[in-house]
Structure formats: C-alpha cells, structure tokens
Length: 246
Image (cartoon, rainbow, N blue to C red; front, side, top):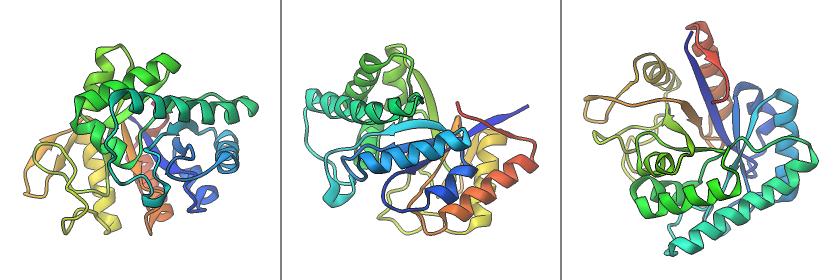
C-alpha cells in the first residue's frame, strides 16, 4: 500500500489553519522570523495536536518585511545560529503542549538557497542534528538540502510540489516566470497523482523526469489552499494511497 505525506506551511498569519489542517499530515509552523509569534505557534500546534498532524519547525531568514523571501548574505555560522534560535523558540512552546517537533523545513529564500548551495545546506543540517538528531529534514527533492543532511546521518524527506512547474534539472521554475504556479485544480491533482504513483513529473518543456516524492507541499498562502488540500487528499485516498507523516 502506497503512502504519502502532505505538508503545509502554517502559522504565517493567513488564518486558514482550522480549515486546512484536517486535510494534511504535517504542518510547518513559522517560528517568528518571517511570520508568526509565540501565540500563533501555540494556536497552530494545538490544532495539530487535535488532528494528529506532525509538527515541524519552519525557520527563515530574519525578514518579516519581505516574508522571508529575500536572500540575505549570511555566513554559515550565522545560518546555523538563526536555525538553532528558531528551533528553541518553537520547542519552548510545543513542550508546554506535550507534543514533539517531528521535522524541520526551511522557509522561502533560506529553503531555495539550501537547495542550490551545499554550504548553506550543510549549515542547516548541522543545526538540526545538533539540536535533535532524531528530527527529519524536509528539502527539495534530490537537492543539496537532502544530500548534505544524509551525509551527516539525518533522516530526510524529499519534498515535491503539486502546484509548481519544474525545470528539466528538477528545480522549480522561478516564480518570476509565467506559468510557474499551477492554478488549475485538476492539473494540480493530476500532478500530485503522477508524482506519487509514478515518481515522475512533466516539466515545463514537456519532458518527463524522475523525482522522488516523500511529501507533497501545499502552500498555505495560496488563494485556493484549502480547496487544493481537500481535493488532493480526497483524490489520493480514492486512488488507495494512505496519508501519513513521514
């Protein structure tokens, strides 16, 4: 029986957590550096506990002004430090709810930089492992994020996107390019099923490439986020695929 995890970035001030969390299996909670605060961490973690959804930290560059989507020029020690600081922030809150942190998924520009730059990926992986070696690191499928974490013995989770177009090298088409985000719900569902059932994705050029899929991301700030979560989850279940955390 095939299984898949569905994750969503949450606690970012969108306010749809109550509606979306029942349809996912893992939540990445903003730690305050790009969005959120202790109250939103608490509220989101409570919902995760209620619906038995795995809790993940969603660390970012310290960049609320740009929602963590602007790449900052930091050395590896600083990257290590900001990830560690955010892990302590979320851990302090969820510990009071008696629920564990299950995984870590970097946000925005930090995520993208980690995917393409192995020194950044290595710094993030070290911070995660030093904090808790049992945590799982989520990263772009097949990228440096995954490779560097594996080198030091961290468990990893290859993340794919049902609502994003891919380039032939397995990278995501930049959002600045037309067609980078797929808004047609039927197409999003079909891409999700292709990723899970076939381990492939059709690129922007029409080429089919292999892509390991351990978890599918749903963007919580998308205009159709709740509908997408429901449709993807319902269709995966109809296809006999079990939804569960990594």
